Image 1 (cartoon, rainbow, N blue to C red):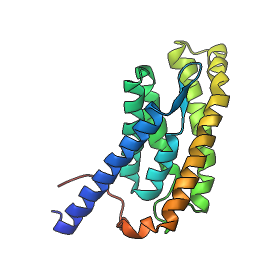
Image 2: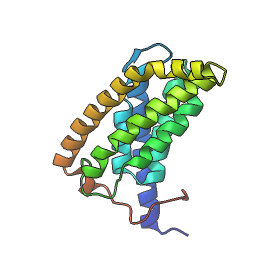
Image 3: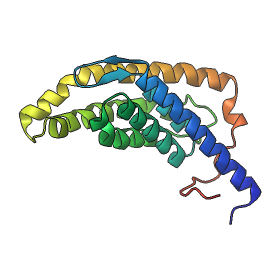
Image 4: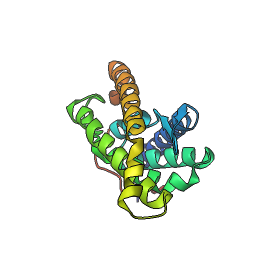
Amino acid sequence: MKNRSDKSRTLLMLSLSAMLAAMVFVMTAYVHVPTGRGYTHAGDGIIFLAASLLPTPYAVAAGAVGAALADGLSGFVIWIPATVIIKGLTALFFTSKSDKIINTRNIIALLPSLVLCVVGYSLYDGIVIAGKFSAAAIAAGFAQTPAYCVQIIASSILYILLGKGLDKAGIKKKIPVAKKIDTEINF
């Protein structure tokens, strides 16, 4: 059974997760540029931020829920399965255990985020959206690579700017750091 302090911390983490999921949604659904089969956005920058602030399960939920809602409510429902997996996995590259949001590990994490975005969405596009497993369909899926690169670059810039500002404000000292990663949410 959780004590009052644990319940308060869980409520805080859930609240922050919901707020960051809403920010992911807004930055993805409303601040985007249409591309060939979808759209390019900077919402991933908020996922990177969530993963740098929250314990892993909360960060994964914030990214997956916010981005999936954006796909669903923007008319791109077919992309939701890929989005949930890709955005959830993206959060795993970052750490919230450092005293700073912008640190070496989190900067390095931008590279596998780019690779996951390009490969994950391109394969999904080539196999699921095209409806066939062929070299031509997969190659066509990879035609969106420039748009995915722009998406991660824009998101990285947003993340670094927000992260530096929040680091300067000392936000990590104001949020209780996880002593252990929560794997279940109980009240």
